[in-house]
Image 1 (cartoon, rainbow, N blue to C red):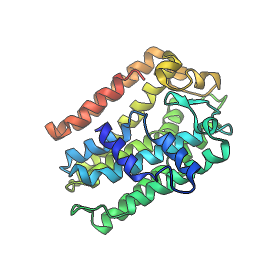
Image 2 (image 1 turned 45 degrees about the horizontal axis):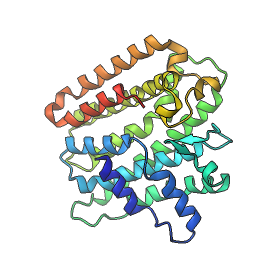
Image 3 (image 1 turned 60 degrees about the horizontal axis):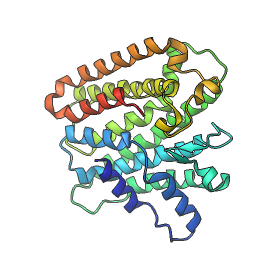
Image 4 (image 1 turned 30 degrees about the vertical axis):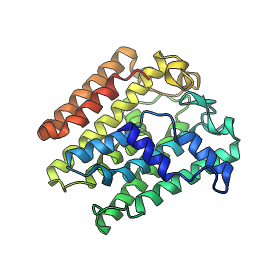
Length: 289
């Protein structure tokens, strides 16, 4: 499925030889050939639970990854985290320049909504009302009430001591909002769920979003730069609050295990239909990079 996501992005991104060539080269540089593709994988797995045709999921999965990649490009800029390495290669502003990196993020965000709004060339196109709902969901997840807002809280939290509730509020927005959108967009491409099942899936998405961030914090404190593909220990160096700095390594691991168990319990109602989501939950919890 990761290869499928790569091929979809390859197809949807503007070709490098189309003007403006430098911008399109930079967009392809950051979006292709790297990353775990967690958000597309979650989108496809939730779609599988709802019996969606994989072809109907491709654009939603690609739109999610384009939003995610744009956020990484902007996050790495000198005015934000000022990082030089991402996915094992120089960050966009290092490889190209700051102005190009800024435009790359802008263009990837715009492309995400273009991709989601366009009619895919198959008979499984979502009805207009559902497609509008999907666009609204992605916009909210990416904006000031989601990822961008979480990043603003994160910047304001440097050198601050946050409570566990405050830290979770930040990451529900910064990381969790787009992960939740991945699950709900995938489900929206399939057979409609009963209200109670929709709530179960939403709860699962929120739990796995926090799980992802806790594991990220653990890896940042333990793994080296070569393993991570980005600068290790960056959060500690910048005195940013993390689950590890707040709880300690042992309790952070315990919290991750609790969230993993809660996610599995939430999915148990769906039986084997949730197999791929359960597998992804385990992967997120146990990943080493």
